[in-house]
Every structure is written in C-alpha cells, then in structure tokens.
Length: 401
Ligand code: TGC
Ligand code: FAD
Image (cartoon, rainbow, N blue to C red; front, top):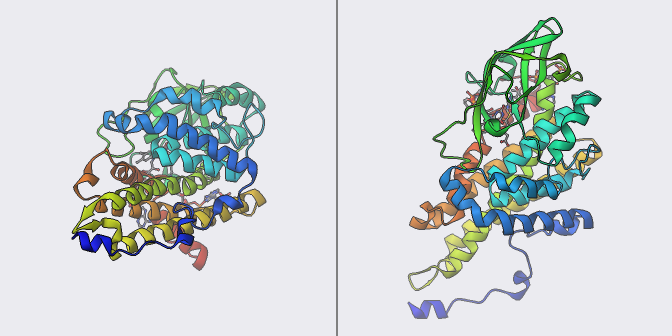
C-alpha cells in the first residue's frame, strides 16, 4: 500500500498556480473597488460567521448579533443610492451575496430580504416620506424588514393571492395570511402584497399593529440559522401613508424578486466554493487503500466537474452583473442564472456530502449544512420548475404555467 502512495506522480507546477475556487481568474476581471468589497465581506465571514454558524444551525438560531456588523460594512441596501445606503454597483452586491453564502445561506437570506425585498420596493415605489422614514434606519440595521408574497395555498402562482385590502375611509383594512416569510418573526416592518379593487398593491405593516401577528415556523431541516414565519392579518388597519404609491400589479413584487434572484445567482457560488474547499482538504488527507483519496481517478473527475460547474456559474453571474449594470438584464436572464447556479450548488453540496462518507452527515463538515440550506434556496424566489418554464416561455412564446 505504501508503494502505491510513493508511485503517485506529482502535480505539474503550472497547475499549482491556479486558484481551485476561481480557475478562470474572475477576480482579475473585477475593479479595485469590487475586490475591496469582496475582501471586507470575506473577512467578516471568516471572523464572525464561520466561528458561530455550525452552532447556530444546530440550535435553530439566527445570529441577530451580526446585524450591526453587516450594517456597519454597508451591506444592507448596498446597491441603493441615497438615504444612507452605500450605492455600490451590481457586481459588488453579487460578491457580497457570494461571500455571505460561503458562510451560510441564512445570512445571505437575511441581507437579500432586507436589501432587495424590503428596502428596494420602498426605494423604487415608496413616497419621499416613506423613504426618509424607513431607509436610513434599515441601512443602519435598526429596523428589520420582511417581504410577504407567498400564501399557504401556493406560492408559485402569486397572481392567485387571497390576502386582500379594502378601503375604509382613507385607511385600508387588510385580511389574509402569508407563509414561509424570512425574517418575519423579528421584522419591524412587513412589505405585504395584497389584492385590491385596483390590482395588487404593497402595504407597509408595522410590528405591533393590532390584528397582525408573525409566529415563527418551527421544525425546519433547512435554513436553520434563519428565521421563517407565517404572517396573519385579521382586520389590520393600514393608514393611507403606508401604501406604496408607485406600483400597482404583480410587476411590483416580481421586480423585487428580480433583484433578490440576481443576488442568489451569485450567492450560491459561495456555498459551492465552501463545499469544494472542504473536499479538496479532506480528500488530500483521507487515506484509503494506501493512498490519499484525491489520488483516485474517479475522485479527481468529481472534483474537476465541481470546478467546471463553479467556473461556468461564476462567468454566468459576472456577465449577468455586467448586463444589470448596462440596463440590459431581463427577467429571463435572471431565471436562467438562478436555475443554473442553484442546481450547480445543490448538486455539488450533495456530491461533497457523499465523498465525506460517514463524516458527511456531521455538521462539523459544512456540506450537509449547505446542502440542506440549498434545498430551500432552489425552492424559494421561484422554484427550479418556475424558472425553467420562464425560459421555455421565452423560447417558444407559449405560456405553460
Ligand atoms: P405574468 O403575466 O408573467 O406577469 C405579470 C406582470 O408582471 C411582469 N413581470 C415581471 N416584472 C418584473 N420582473 C419579473 N421577473 C417579471 N415577471 C413578470 C409582467 O410583465 C406583467 O406586467 P404587466 O405590466 O403586463 O401586468 O405573470 P404570471 O401570473 O403568468 O406569473 C409568472 C410567474 C409564474 C413567472 C410568476 O408568478 C413567478 O415568478 N412565480 C414565482 C413566485 C416566486 O418566486 N415567489 C417568491 C416569493 S419571495 C421569496 O421566496 C423570498 S425568499 C428570500 C430569502 O430568504 O432569500
Ligand atoms: P408550490 O407553488 O405549491 O409548488 C409545489 C411544486 O409544484 C413545486 O415543485 C413547483 O415547482 C411545482 N409547480 C408549480 N407550478 C407548476 C407548474 N405550472 N407546472 C409544473 N410544476 C409546477 N416567500 C415570501 O413571500 N417571502 C419570503 O421571505 C420567503 N422566504 C422563504 C424562506 C424559506 C426557507 C422557504 C422554504 C420559502 C420561502 N418563501 C418566501 C416561499 C417560497 O417563495 C415558496 O416556497 C416558493 O415560491 C414555492 O411556493 P410553494 O412552497 O407554495 O410551492
């Protein structure tokens, strides 16, 4: 057995120069500012997220104590202009999501929801008064938001929502329920989408409003370091000044989803990188049949295939970001990237878990945590099927939903 180990050929030196997590040197295509943002978030993740996340996942606890740190780095509403937001470009937002999700999808989820699903609609569709009231405090992490679109009877078809709002004098009265709402139980303000006689509209419902409750959903096996809640509205009175004036119709919530899905397409690359990194270390030291696991052809093929899929996902995300910056990104582009990259990350996490053998079922190794999280990530913000059908509709012109 020792003989087999000794006969292994050493790797070529040129290959050693490549970064296994960035084979095509996407980093070289970034600006200095983009690299700086990535490095600062990476430091936060290494120093503050990774040391606590396994325990948080096991305890089903969101590490709320990280919120001021996320805020002080400008990560909340990072791509919005004004109102104390950092005004970073789309690539920076993507890199922020990627680094955070290298830590855990739950931390990226928190930032996605706060930034893309709550601050963005207030910024894009809110009145000047609403922007001044909410955005600076949300950027500072003093106010937490949640986004209520999905309902218990079927989230893929939000046009069929039952939650409704009726005019009473100048106020609105809201009735209905939402399900699977990230941050719901800790949110100070909920952006709630409801049908009205004019079409779907967005309502800002503040914590403590009579008739509004947000109990946490228990027993999750996925995103355990993230808070998920139901929202209930029982004759909740919402004053006229808390209705988003700038949009009516499903395009309101769907345009928020574009922003968040964009971030997910980048974020999941981080989860996949974390899994591959762990496996490169593990297979280099795990010795079976007299040689390190990494010296076997089938193991190398599996690792190489992961690197191939991560690389294509990185290049897809980078081009998507450039298109977003140029104003040419369309919903179908976002759907394809969200679908491809989530599938890539989930398959890699599952394969890494397998290559760890029995150790793969332990939370001491990150792949099973990432794998369980990614089961949610491939489902929320539009399931894989919804994004496939969006591309199908784009190709054929026929709506198969
Ligand atoms: P459809 O007829 O296609 O469109 C209705 C109106 O919306 C416009 N539109 C979009 N606008 C912006 N961005 C998009 N991606 C858009 N897609 C459509 C469209 O132009 C139209 O506008 P108008 O002016 O003509 O009225 O609508 P449809 O009913 O056929 O549905 C299409 C479908 C199935 C794609 C849509 O319903 C969908 O995306 N379903 C999936 C729902 C979903 O993704 N829910 C996510 C909930 S939030 C969440 O999961 C947060 S998790 C966060 C975390 O923790 O990270
Ligand atoms: P359904 O819509 O009932 O779908 C069930 C299955 O049917 C899926 O496999 C789907 O792909 C398939 N399907 C649907 N339509 C078709 C079709 N036409 N043809 C073939 N197959 C089809 N929502 C929010 O609003 N805010 C949040 O913050 C939020 N956070 C979430 C956090 C977590 C942890 C999770 C798990 C979900 C969250 N969601 C949130 C909800 C999420 O967006 C929905 O779960 C998702 O959109 C799917 O809706 P559903 O669960 O009702 O599944």
